[in-house]
Image (cartoon, rainbow, N blue to C red; front, side, top):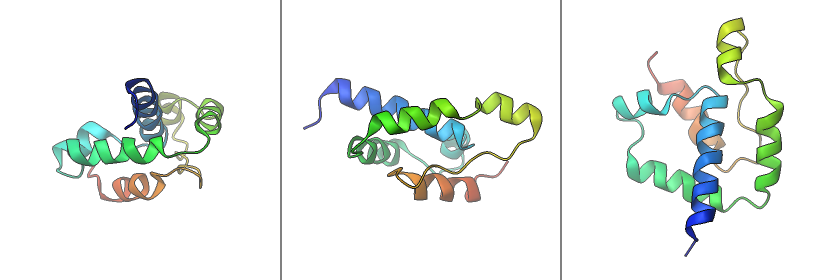
Length: 97
């Protein structure tokens, strides 16, 4: 079992990753694309990451999502090492904007 501190860290990282790559989790939920069990599974996948410091570093090196919106720059894809990359890519394709 994963301790609460680890789960909270990875929930925060996964949420930041979603925002950074342009996934609006609230909208995805409204459209039935992500429900609480799916998000729990995403956080669990994140806890399996071997290098959360690399994730935090990658996130810190990206422009904040609001800056990307303001300057119409394409949002990055999640890095190859992200255990949730495929989910984030799928959500970006499916979310109706």
